[in-house]
Structures are given as structure tokens and as C-alpha cells.
Length: 302
Image 1 (cartoon, rainbow, N blue to C red):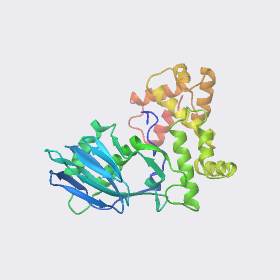
Image 2: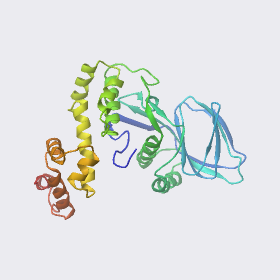
Image 3: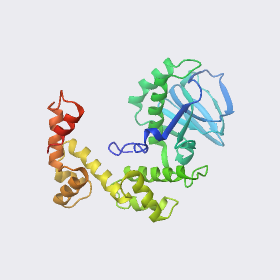
């Protein structure tokens, strides 16, 4: 995922997700004598910190080195061992991730088995702290929230696409909610692709007209309107980085800066220049000491 585009899960309502840590964290510290052969009834995210582990999942072998993470899906038989002279240390956490009730979100995704975590420099201290502070027989609230950070980082690096229909068929309201979420995620991570809204609708397992209505009912916009909104959110980020409106227009695919300015104001309720001035007022502290409603009114002045 690019820096501005964000996570594939960014548009998922927090209330729709249910993360459960099904046991206490496993603080791996394995010598050459260590060997494991098993399968888990839940997902297992393994992150290496020092040394190197060796794993076989199915018929494929995966070495795991510091900064790398691997997902062992539920029901998958695997074996692991350390064939080096140094201790193999790391973290393993069993979990489930549900969405819209009991729907298994991990089962809906095609993910790389193993990745090098792209944000390793940022994550490594947190993972070490998580491992060191983990109680032996319980899970803390802080662990729950920290692990969600680790899991999202893994998904961002490992995500290949959505599985058609998922591993387990879903019926009813949860199915259309999930289909809308997938389409919104696809659109929001590639809003500059002129075909992304049409592709997202085509990929949904529903009649186009029905899906358009369901999408609009849940998000307040049609897929095409939602793409344009995400495109303007991208423009906002670029404006806040100091790019001029004409530079931003070119960056997000508008040949005419004036047309871009009109489209931006239609979506965001303020001109590109006005948005930059509003950000500057906030940075200069002109809204300090105000309550939320007064801040909103002050920042709304273009």
C-alpha cells in the first residue's frame, strides 16, 4: 500500500471487526532441540525477532528471519524447528478476526504466507515490548490493541486480493455488508484508477443495480461518487504536503486545474486554496482554547 492510500482495512468500521486473542502470547525462545508439529484451530501469526526458524507448511518450506512474519491459517498442519546454533526468538499469537458477526475475515483474503514487514523499524520496539510484558496465562487490553496494529501491518504487506465467495459461503445481510466493504476497500486504495469503481461493482456477486443501491444505502454515495470522494481525499493529503492546487490536479489526473478546483469544492465544501489556508490556521494555533463546535466553525472559514 502506498503511504497516502493507507491500509486495505482503513474503511472498515471499527465496530464491524471482532478480534479475539484466543490464548496468551507465545514468547518463542528456541534452541536447536526445539521442534513442533501440529495444527491450530485458529489463526497463528508468527513474528521472528532473533535467530532463524524453519517451517514446513503443506509441502513448502519457509525460513523465518528477524523482521519477517508468517501466517499459519486455522486447520493447516505445519512443523517448525531451529537448525542454527543461535536461539530463535520471536512472538506467536493465536487469534480470530471476525467481521459483521461471526464471518471469518481472514478466510475472505488471499494473503502471502510470509512477508518482510515494511514498517519493521517502527514495529520492532512495540513487538519486543508486547512479548516481554505478556502475562503467561492471560491477555491484556493493551495487547489486544497492539496486536491489531501488528495484524494490520501484516495484512497490508501480505494482501493479494479478495477471495471470490470467501472460503466459507455467507448469506443474508452479512454477505451484502461484506461485499460493500470489499468494494469500498478496493476503490479507496486505488482511487486514481479510472476503472476501479466499475471493476469493484463487477466483482461483487450481485446484480449491478441492486449492488449500486446497497452501496449507496451504506456509504451515502454510489461507487463512482465514492471513488471521486476518495480521489479528493488523496488531493487533500497532497495539498497538506505543500503542493500547489495545479500540481495536485496533475497528480490525481485532472488536465484542467480549474475543473479540479470545482470538483474539489463540490466534494469537500471548500476550495483547494481554502483548505490550505484552513490547515495553516490550525497549525498556527488559531483554534487553541476553543471547544469542538467553535473549532469546527473557525476551521470552516475559507
